[in-house]
Image (cartoon, rainbow, N blue to C red):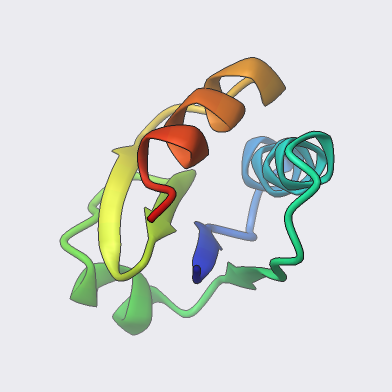
Length: 80
């Protein structure tokens, strides 16, 4: 599983990244969460508003900061 937290230029994106990391920890997954702040890379996922979340190459959230609980739910839906 590959998880990317998109954004990095604002407090909301930083908090989103930390919430996603906590969600991974709560799910006891051995997965690294990558923070992506490069605008071109973010746009490659079709995300026009950050913060965003990409799981296994698919944008699953954009334009809103996820709570830890929301991140847990999204990650669980995309476990293979």
